[in-house]
Length: 191
Image (cartoon, rainbow, N blue to C red; front, side, top):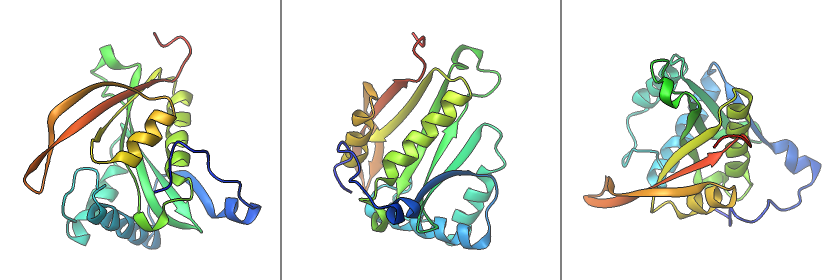
């Protein structure tokens, strides 16, 4: 992945037209296939949002289809030349959590390794932030494994503040991995 703290390089209008991010409410077969392929590649590379080994294809398909049924979750996809190459989720707190109703969570964000260096991770994150602001959320939270250095650089370059860490956040290949926790104020009056 390119240095995420650097702004995306100037691109021609043709290149710009190749990059897009959108919220998705239903999957066609081609989109679901592409998303599963991108997820598989991201897991193999070490950025599989919780998975260490890729699950069976049917499990991945069921996972993504199921996400669309959860009222508190919105699924965003990143496309390169029209093909889905990454995804992120905006998660709202459940209705019974009034104390944290002002904040949302950015979860399970990834771009397939073969589609990096196009500024899609930045574009995806900004689109999720935009949606959270539109829903009047004041704070966006996220967490990430310490091994995901490109993601950490991206989030920090976008103004996310690290507030804590968990020394045994995950276990990857039998070894504990530290987790880092971030937040970003989305509204000027959030504090």
